[in-house]
Image (cartoon, rainbow, N blue to C red; front, side):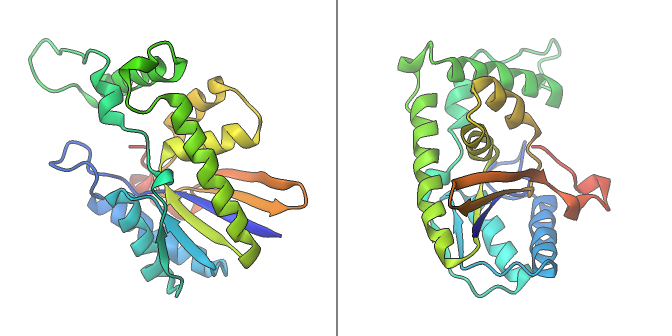
Length: 220
């Protein structure tokens, strides 16, 4: 029986010049996970990441901290949805003092924008619809699942793809996706096993490697 470990990237640089770069905390999260996986005896046959910088850098830090010899492979189908486009289709909050939205206001805006995208009612407004997003994630999952015949496969991706994989494998609906996506922890691990029944979800959002330091626990 093979296994697939889906890793959400470390914390990105929210509010920075380039969101797609890991923050200092994000780099520490990735390294902590690498050490934790190595201590558990995980030795992957392959490490796959999306083409986003935060995903690739997380994968590099995992391999370095764990001391793995596995090559890094890129599969762009593991990329996160285009959150900037999704946000742009929903009016941003306008704080009375003229400053940027607070983290709470941003989260509310993000959830409202995501809801509009997920419903499919305005598909013509998006370059990639929610249906197209879920289809490519399922295709990426199938490819990664095939590779588990060689052993453990580690995939570094983002919260959206992780949430859809869980939703898909549980044969749940979009309501489940909506509930899962906001709670995926940076550098968390979701485990999927491959056996005679195909792919089966075993665990979601494991972040035990962060629990010794509350400051390391982040969702954005």
